[in-house]
Image (cartoon, rainbow, N blue to C red; front, side):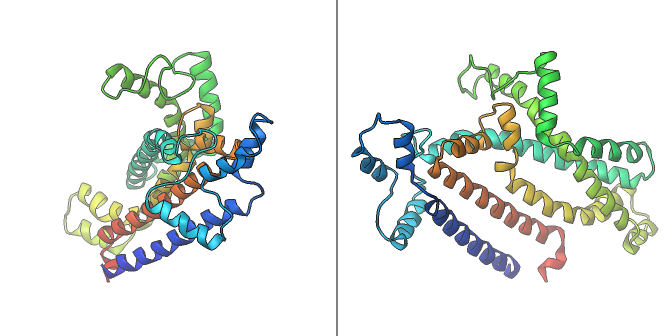
Length: 325
């Protein structure tokens, strides 16, 4: 518990620093959201309406110190401001629309690649120089050398555009509306998700397999593995309870980082497939100088990384009893 409390204190300080940077960074940039909207409408708005827009976005001429505490109070109430690109929708509403799709696509793909990559690494190390250990690592390393967006473009062109096996864009058919109680809608979501999710899995599964295999090979030469075999324990128990559990620790740390960056890591894949996730929203926010939406997305990404790493620390305590001391 003391270990977890120390870690929690560290993450609390890191969260406060990220909040502070997130507040000051947009305010150090030239201009403000109201001026950006005024310029976009190219004279269709009257100059006196700029003051009204500034009030709508919570901007004021008060000292930054006062604005900072106002900003913290707003965050404590879950208020991130008004989005410029989706005016007059609040930033929280805009983020909520993309959050579900990003978690569904990138989150599921990350979990799948982590699980199967580690299983393949365990089996490959246990049956060293076998067919799986000889073929899978170089093949998956070759595929993983290509970035997500390159695999996505190839898959989109050959499998969707040329062959017509998968939909070209979006998260579901344009003829449907969001209805999770409809089997037709769920089938459409799955059909649209297969291609982008497969690209993410193929690009990342090789790294998980190689990391697990190399660690597992070193673990299998330890004395306690030889002792377990001498005691007559089953091969399955030795492989999973003794070897794999200890070899998994480095990958668990990497998994925490991967989960944290799920919100931003699928940016290019979502752009190519026009998938309405947070990565696609972030691109629109940057293009349209949507400072409130950028702030909200950056803050979510930071908190996601911190939260995922804290969960990994808790998992470490369970996997490795040495951390409890």
